[in-house]
Amino acid sequence: MPEEVTAAEPKKPALFSIHSQRLRVCILMMLSGAIAQCMRLNLSMGLPCMINATLSHELYNTTLNEENTGTLDWSPQQKSAILSASSWGSLIATLLAGYVSDKFQPKIVITLGVLGMAIMTALGPLFANISYYLFFASRTIQGISGGFIFPAGSAMASRWYPTTERSTLASIYSVGSTLGSSVTPLIVALLCTSFLGWSSLFYVFAIAGLVFVLFWVYVVSNHPSSNRLISDEEREYLEREISFSGRHGKGHEKGADNFPWTKLLFSPPLLANYTCQFSYQFAQTAMQQFLPLFLNDHLGFSITKNGLYTTLPFTLNVFFGLFWGRVADLLKEKKLMTPTMAAKVFQAIDCFGSAFAIALIAIIPTVENPNSALIFLLIFGVTFPAGVSGYFTSLISICPQYSGTVMSISRGWGLVSHMGTPWMMTLFNYWGLKQKWIILYGLAAVFQLISGILFTIYGDCEVQSWARKVEPRKEDPENVPEETKID
Image: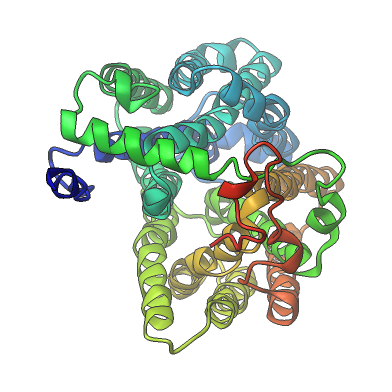
């Protein structure tokens, strides 16, 4: 029987190999997130050196830092409002991005997304000098462009990665945003203090975006079957595995009559996750967008010192995000913790640890003792990324059959928080609140505590009973089990 010999399972090409084309695609997807984050965050770090410090001190009674030799005379209210412009653009994109990414080629969507961000970033200095409102509009357009990148990346992943490799992709891909958050403050600080001036922080990131687009267009394709660089062995493997995953995933039809909207919106475990997403995004926005202004206005940090202190927690986020994930997996593999218990423990590390650090960073450091902020930034950098092994793991585990909808709802909660934070600071500045920083970081700490308590009570990592049923297809009933539990 020669036929039996040929039935041997084909060898799987290694993912982590210099010959792996899907690894190259994965790295470029990570870089798309990193570069987009750099172009998104360059403004929050660059604002202090863009503003004329002397004029701002005279007009708005801000802390005078003679190292800030910018040319713009924006008010504190305008500074807070401009930080939310890209978020408004992201909100607009959220309404369309999922549909567009599925309807059209994700490679083109990501290309246009990064290209749009790069063009608006390059035009930033020109628009800022012409008109505040023109610059606000350009940042909004930049947000719209960037809002398409992540959904298109998810669509690309479904075409390039079998089910067994998608968790690995997610862990690498998610590092991109954190990596961008960690390097942006340092790069901006160096550029602001260089002879190139504050406009260079826009040009450098725009050039990086354009260079990325060149590599992306050459290396990536929408499907492995049409890629010019992939080996025949890897192409055949991906076509076989992804095709199988696609057939496997069509074992049920999700019609409007049985789609569990009520459960997806109001299930206690999911509500706990959504609350964690809200508080996580609020704390992240408070630290990413407003920490540079806090260190500059409240503690009088120089541009260089500001960059170092702001870079520190997000650099730690990169390494400890991977560290906590590995520890969580080891605990589950060794049967020392159930998935639910592990998620609750690591979410507690995130919520309670970061709440402690955020609350004290607004209270203890003063102009006379500014360096005391370092210890709290260290604690925040270590504890905050544990949430990836907590609520985020729960989000993708609790109802895999509807994970796309769950992620969309969660993203909506996060956008409300992300957009509301700058506008809240705008109101604080308008009202002239002297304790605005204590209120901002105090709220971030309270939200983290509340979400941590709710997740400890209601958090879950097991597939919910209402998400386990898979109806057999009428046209092919013999190929579908009566009940399938989705792992």
